[in-house]
Length: 447
Image (cartoon, rainbow, N blue to C red; front, side):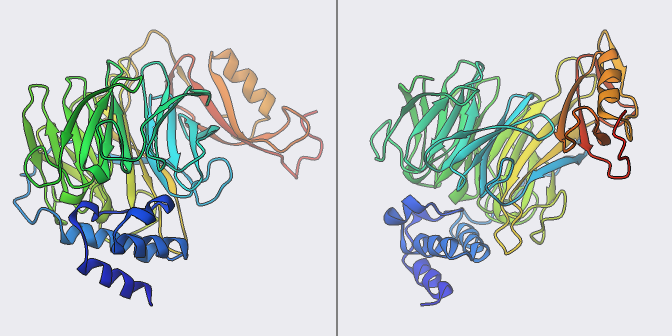
């Protein structure tokens, strides 16, 4: 039977509890409805574009319905693309369905679903290490000690050290308190408590960092405090909880005082959603949502007023555009910056024949201006020898990292790129990344 026929047949028998299924998981096929099984087969057969698109259509059809969009508010700083990295593959730095993403500012962690690993990158996208999780990771979060929390398709929460050493796990498949059925997004608050978007159980569960159950919210429905496959969670410094209620195409917020509010509904206009997956909040109270089915990111204030969006329209792998955005993580400007702004990381997986599974980094804010005791201007290093560049940077109190080096004569590569760019003012002690390569037209090396 053709794939589309399977999916159409599945829609007629769709159960509301499992309507949204992006990136269908191998181990979930046995416990999903006919539509999800069709999506899963399509994914395994290589037609990921069709499968993911159909999943998004289902989310839109059975969402909460079209309602009034929040009023637009003018004046947010613009969002600009800083860089991107990744690509489909199994090599270090490549992905096969990157899902959740988390950052502490200095490091970025990405749940590489079919890669069965969590990859760690330095600021700027330099690959550092992989944590083999032995299953398919979905969500990822960090605590203040640097421990890494991972939700998996084994229906567990696994905890690793920053260097990848296994620490502990909790959870198993089930509906009882403390059990999970497709745990997805994770968040950790300032006290070390862990919040889990328990998708197929239509609830959010809160645990201590050691896995002791503290609280449960939810139940299937469209009323305030109810969910339909929640996929993303975030918590701010004031103790407010934000939930990407995927199946209802909305965001719900539980205030620290215990009051639920919500915004959004199914649609494509500003403030509407189509199966939102990821959600994050910065220290200024801005809420960022990966609006998966609309192939865009949206920004709101903490009460749901629409501020701006980027991406959207036709699916695209062009820089700054999206094709199935999944996870979102943010880190706000450090205290020594004058500028007010936020760095935003979004994961995406392209479901077509030209897969471009990647992380994109954006900046939302005014131009960076450092306020610090010692600031240094980055020199122009292009075309110099590696060892000369290292010596000059060291004399300025700057550190060095590199991402390409092919010359067997250590230190004799040529610098063909640098980040930050020449003339940039940076805090003393910052790192400059050098792109290095052998110059075939310079056979004499650096001697």
